[in-house]
Length: 206
Image 1 (cartoon, rainbow, N blue to C red):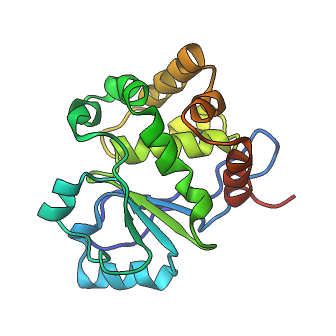
Image 2: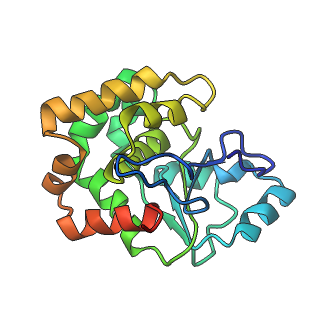
């Protein structure tokens, strides 16, 4: 579902995507977008009206200094760079998602497990364009929840200028090189309990 946040171009709720166990991602639980720094006053009000309990800003510190989030002083806001600043090319070349994952395993795992620590309620994730870093993190979270790769790719392709094949190749790489998403995150420092909590947070109850 597209989010009507004036100033955001890639805002949407990933709720409704199917899991392999027959359940779906709950609506209003995981919201993705591009940078909030471009929100209008009405857009800011719309975000606040959702009742978001945690905002994960995946941008680097220098990006947040150049284009501050309007929510930077809110207790819900958390700036957690998804990748090291030296890995800049990983955010500009779609096929470089593989090296992004290989070179930032612990950092990416740490950010993803923050979903577990967030207070109950809607969680918003964004980077600058809402495409690369956001796309990778959301793809990992959806994979943990059991959403099939084709459905993850279809959601990713809703972002302007993106091809679902990019995410399919990324997930295939994770399977071939790391044994799958769960194995990748476990090796990055996540626990089985944390992955279970991510699934429970995102999925409808049985």
